[in-house]
Each structure stands twice: as C-alpha cells, then as structure tokens.
Length: 204
Image (cartoon, rainbow, N blue to C red; front, side, top):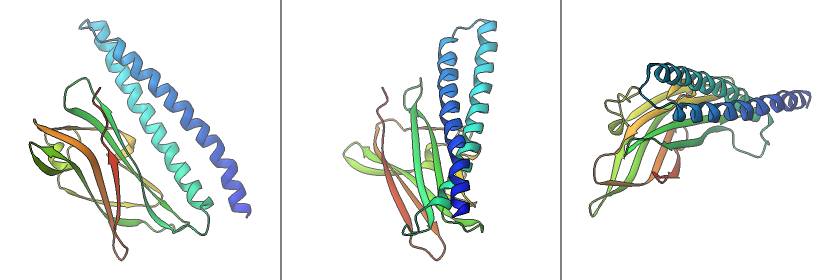
C-alpha cells in the first residue's frame, strides 16, 4: 500500500512533465516548419530546431519510461501481468508516401526480470485488386533507421520504443500501394502471442 501511494505521488509530476515536453515539442516542430527558406541563417535555425526536437523526444521517452514503471506498480491485481503493445504512432511528412512512425511497448507487473521476445510489424492494404501485407522492414530500406530484418528482437524491463530512445523513424510506401492498417505482433517465449492493429492515417 505504501509503495502504491509513493508511486502515485511520483507519477503525477512525471505525467505533468510529459504534457509540458509534448507542448514544447509541438512548438519546436512549428518553428521548424516556418524556417524553410534556403538562406544560410535559415539553415542554421532549421538544424537547431531539429536538435531541439530530438532532445525533446528523448526527454519525453525518459518520462514515458518512468510512467510505465509507475503504472505497472499501480496496475489492478485483476489485470493480467505482462506485455502491452501501447501505441503505433504515424505522422505524415512533406514528401508524398513518406511517413514517420514510432512503436511503444510496455509491461504490467512488478517483475524486474527483462521481458524478452520478438516483434513483427506489417502494413496491410491493397495493391491494385489484391490484398497485400508488407513487412515494415521492407518499407524502411534506405532510411536512416532502417530495420535489418522483418523480425525484431526486444528485451526490456518496463518500457521500450522502436526505434530506440523515443525517436521517430521513416518509412516509404511503394507506388500503387494503398495502406489500410498496421498489424503488430509480439511474442514472448512460453506465452500466447499478442496482436494489435492500428488504422492508417490520412496523408493530408
């Protein structure tokens, strides 16, 4: 009981800090969109905005790790402990058929042993008149944070992001492919696989 009360008190400022950092991140992204000319000064401001965004994303990730731990401690006993697929975030970019993505995993429970398993992510949609399922790794080829293999191993105690440190990575859709949803499947040895689907966003 004392542990739960302490976790509540510690989680509140962490949650407030996440909200504050996300507001700063939105402002930084807006500044980045404004300074879009080819002037040298604008380029310097553009780079500074990118560094600010990266720093804020890393700070938010750290706060989210803390919150995941507190929520694991406070989780009702009736809920099944173990892995959670929290979110798959998608953002459109200024380039057609290019998107930014981030996947977040967490766990419920007080076990401090690392949770190990493997993850597969596929983008489902239509190519012409056929239903098609494309591995995320295929869509990240040539990108800075490209995935080497379709199956991604993971090992974490409370919280993990793909890519690491809470950054966003990029993917590119092939011509003619119309996505409808993203399917995330996580497997932990000895447990039933966990699956979750996320609807695709409009590119507008």
